[in-house]
Image (cartoon, rainbow, N blue to C red; front, side, top):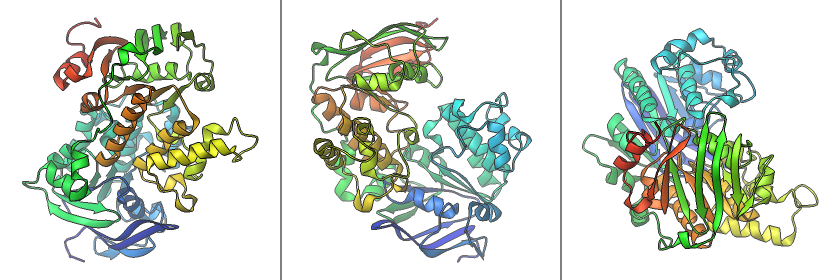
Length: 494
């Protein structure tokens, strides 16, 4: 180990049954640097982060921290070694209050408040259940918990994926401060612009091994993509949408219509029509009512007033199950809410069918065939009944969508389905959504990533203060127009 290295991991390997997540991966992090850990879906990034955080052990390999070999048998060992992690999914227990979650972590509100004040979150109510707190706030609270431990090495796994640009700026300020203190940050993100703006060096994983290590001065996004995917996949990555784009959805029947929908003060008179064969996009700044709108559409909340029509007939859903029975299904923002993490891929794909089956995990032959077709279409490794929790985030999201491929649906509600997912898997999801629309399905897609609007959608709606304030063809939309509408600079929502 170099005497100057803060962390050095050597020949790290990890298998889950026959599936190799890491094979002899090396990583060196120097003091006073922001180091990017990059790779496509399933490259092994999150597995390596969990090994460094002692969530589970490596099968083979050594980890040295500040010149001392670290025995990382439990997460407390990682904390004692000066490593703190913000994982890809919130680490808080949803049924406990924020204060209770802090106590479990052996922290107090006083420990995290100085950091929350810097993030403009000093007003947070610690008696709220974690399940009632927006995902972005949970991510920042996880960061404050990590910073309260004053670590030498801060591991950030896709932390900015759920954040607004202002919230991401708080994170970037912290990262720079940590570097200036002589500490280090290991930063995992699929947003390559963030990598080039923030990071000093990068280690790139491909198929569980290190494909490249590089200084980032003078490097551009194209070089990073080439290192991540390999030359043979560059053509597909450069042109992610391959399904037929020429459709005339407005001539098709209306699959879903909202008429003056309202929910308390969050949804304020939303109306729209979604046609069969159409991908209708929705974008908004955080907290403009998009979460609540999707909760109403999916049957999770009943509207205060207004009407929802499915194929021209009123839908008065008392639960998501009522919406599902009418062919209206949801891919949620948090895939953990849709998956059975300790079950296999096949069991998860089949889970919407079990209500129809005679008993748990007993499917009719035609239902089993539908699961098989979903597996083939999604290109997911299902060897040895691998648990879904062992899959990468991108493959987990494909399983979330695949559940409805197996069950069948008419209208697919997608809430930020590519958040925190690598470019290769994004390409696959883009293709899949376009293929589904070409087959006659209706897709309502909320996305926080504006470039997706032009890549995927036929039309786009912009939401502000609970209202639809802008609508146009996606092909003629650009980021300037959408951002202007999202801030309601035209005064439509006034």
